[in-house]
Amino acid sequence: RTYKTHEDGKQLVMDLYNEGDFLGYISLLEEAAYKETAVAMEETELALIPKREFEDLLHKNTAVQQKLIKMLAKNITENEQHLLGIAYNTLRKKVATALTSIQNKYQTNKNEPFYIDISRDELASIAGTATESFIRTLTEFKNEKLLDIKKDNKIEIINSKKLENLLR
Image (cartoon, rainbow, N blue to C red; front, top):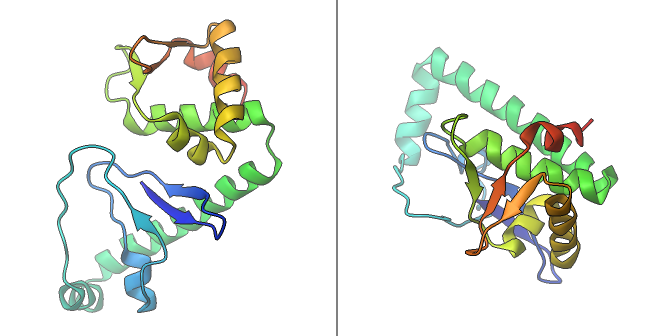
């Protein structure tokens, strides 16, 4: 995940990454220091592309240029949606959005149960809400049988359809 830290110490998760995703390219294009902190949430293998090779690839390959432009446009659109959601969505919608986006990004087999094994603090940061409010909403969702909270604190999404309906 990447995040920014506010002067009061609160973290705002900017993005979650998966296998094959690129990060850090915006700072490289701006020729600026990284503006976000990246943290691996599980064992991770990174491939680093040296700046010179990245620039050579961009200058010599129009297909790479087009792919990068599409990635930048997608990044802008996702960030706008995320910020609008944090600013205007209800608490329930913020929590539902965080849970469904994680499920959509990381669930590999739709026929198997999906578990979220991320700390409540990190999940609250992804949702853009206080941890206590996030936990209270999780309990509501559990009572509504949208999810289950296992003994090891993993969250199992048990009714993704109803959870997604909260987004409308």
